[in-house]
Image 1: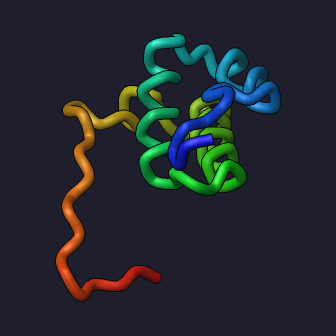
Image 2 (image 1 turned 90 degrees about the horizontal axis):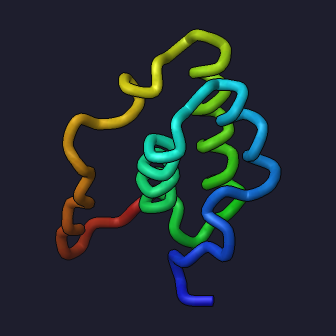
Amino acid sequence: MPRGKRLNPHPIALDFPPREASIPPAQLDRLCNIISKDFPADDTMYELHVLRACMAVSDGYAKIVDILPAKPVVAAPRRKGMTTG
């Protein structure tokens, strides 16, 4: 599997929370794409962050329109010599 490609962008474990939160499919796709860019090689962190965002909407702590950026997210290029973590 190529890095960053997920077999299932909406894992079965994540089926119920988006439906409970009434997140439309198009907005769920945007949310998953954004989070997937943050964690391209870590499915566990990807699923955790999607789940937490859906639960925040479901529990009334946030609205999906507040979570999603108004403009598409483009990752900033890394500068030479910078490290992460």
